[in-house]
Each structure stands twice: as structure tokens, then as C-alpha cells.
Amino acid sequence: MEHLGMNDILIQLNELFERIPRRHSADNVKEIYNILDTYEGLLRQIETEPAYEQVIAPFFDELEPIQAIIKKSGDNKAAKKIKDTLFDEASGKLKDSMEALKQLYN
Image 1 (tube, helix red, strand yellow):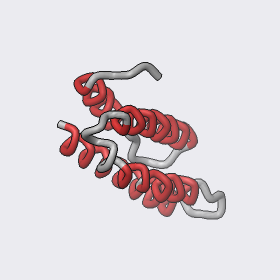
Image 2: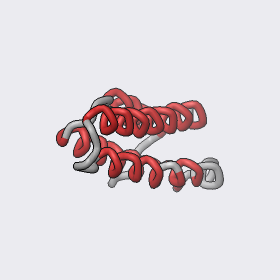
Image 3: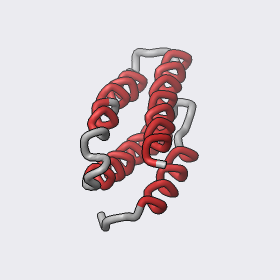
Image 4: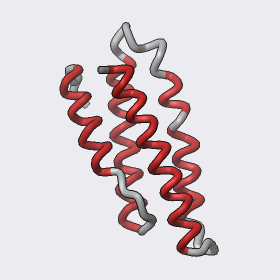
């Protein structure tokens, strides 16, 4: 990934934020995993900046629990409503993380 400027990162963050799906489906699971991967890449970019390297770690720590909730939402034994609830929880946590990062990085 090429090194992005602050404005480019904020633009990408906003684009990712707008793409976050709210309801569980196979396509939405793939989409949210792609968003998480891209988000992690942006976090790594921000981490390279000396002013942010010490404060960015908590954002990485939030990724694993979000991934675990998404994985749980894919349980074939779970009812559709439970899958939707779990997926909605994960997407909400991801949105919260991105909002907090935008506030910190802006």
C-alpha cells in the first residue's frame, strides 16, 4: 500500500464508513471483512506517523472482537434474527471505532 496523506486517509475512512452493511447476508459478511482489511491497512498507515504511533494501538485491539462477532453471526445453527443482531452489533462497533479514529485523526 502506498503511503497516503492525512486527507487521503480521512477520505478513505469516510468511504469505508459509508460502505458498512447493517444486515447479515453472505455478501455482507464478505464486504465487512474487506472493509476490516482495508481499515487495518489505514491504521497501519496512520501508525507510521510519529504523532499517532502511540495512540493507535487501541484501534487495532478493537478489530479482533469485531471479527469474532461477525464469525459468530455466520453460525448455521443461529436464527436469522440472531444473525442480524450479531452482525448489527459488529457493524456498529466498527462504525464507532471509525468515528473515534476520525475524531482523533482530524
